[in-house]
Amino acid sequence: MNTPSVLTPRPKIGLIIIGDEILSGKRQDKHLSKFIEILAARGMSLDWAQYLGDDRAHISARLREAFASGDLVISCGGIGATPDDHTRQAAAAALDRELALHPEARALIWQRIQDMAAEKGESVDPEHPDTLRRLEMGVFPVGAEIIPNPFNKIPGFSVGTVYFVPGFPVMAHPMMEWVLDQRHADLQRPVQRQELSLIVQGAMEASLTPLMERVEAEFPGIKVFSLPSVDHPQWGRHIELGVKGPAEQMDAAYQALKSGVIQFGATVSTELVR
Image 1 (tube, one colour):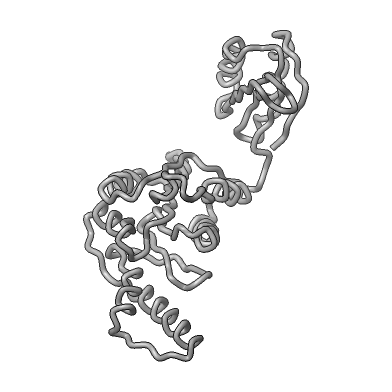
Image 2 (cartoon, helix red, strand yellow):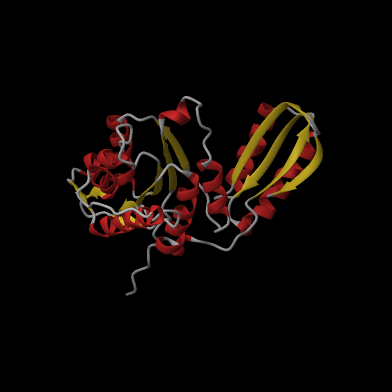
């Protein structure tokens, strides 16, 4: 007797962005929109995102949840060696592991130090306090693996499916791509339409809710979304109503949604494909 195979559900994908400078507004976050773009180019999508300040205990609590979740998580920021960088220590605490200088990270950082000194025509002392401080950027939780940094060789690290990259976009974004392409190529899918939607005028969101619920019930796996606006420069007061989900169901679900809107008596002014 053959035992039916059980499909392993795809892990959720999350993004953690760390830094007081983001929460205070001193710097604008550039990671969320870029990561969504990077995922979309691989037929993937983001399930959740969190912004955290530079509080070690808070970061550790959130990372403990990330490690336990089994999600594919990328954490941006806080892996440097200044007093306001807490991510490496928080990750170790969340894992209940010691921190140690990673041998591969040490070699990469040492090479970077030598290269920078050579560019200036200077020699470098491996025991100089500045050298030792720079090497602290390679101190990771025991058992971590490195993530290569094509910008300046200073690596990030990973434990399981939680990946830690710097806060600098010029470094973080190619490292995100490396993680997806080298560690999770199996999760990538052919790029398809992500959603179909229409601009609805002459209806209230609450009045269309039964239609939305009916479409989701009729097409399992499809999500119906509603984005109302009161002052759009092109469409004025309207609702963007649409569907997203498996490609094989999207057309039928969209047609059911559109027909329901028309039967309701509302006006469809524009149709969108994304």
